[in-house]
Image 1 (cartoon, rainbow, N blue to C red):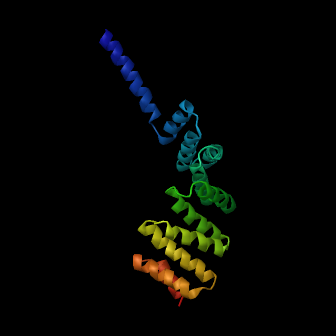
Image 2 (image 1 turned 30 degrees about the vertical axis):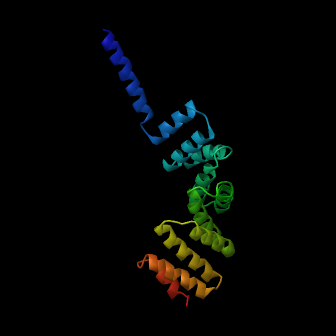
Image 3 (image 1 turned 180 degrees about the vertical axis):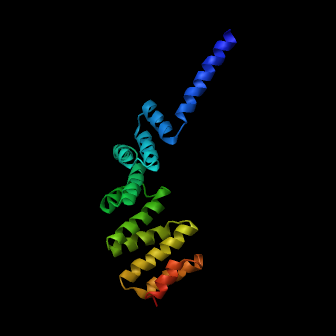
Length: 188
């Protein structure tokens, strides 16, 4: 009888735990309920966005930025994805200002460069792309950044320098059609 009772208690614990692990959103929500911290808010906000529940996720991310600086990055990414470029820039700038040495800073600066470029703020875009190249990005990120830097330099009519960056992108990935197009559109 005692063994049966213990088995039932353990089974109930397993069933309960399995419910908590049913999805990333449920797990993050349970974590926030048990440990209400900024990091837990960040995690739940990020999981809600991944699940396509952007409006709910944004609420948690906006609360999380007060104590979890990485939430600025996640919020900036989500805002950029939504088309709120000005909001994204504000959050990404806060992230790289407060956390310049975190791994996500490479991606944050790349996103900032793209956001500035989308607004025609070429000088700022160029600055961000150059910073990415100094931060030891992955080969794929380096290729993309070389090409984006070439595009921004072309917009400023710095054709020779743009060509050098398009060629650097092609040296890393000879199949980068966008870099070939950049060379063909005006870089010398």
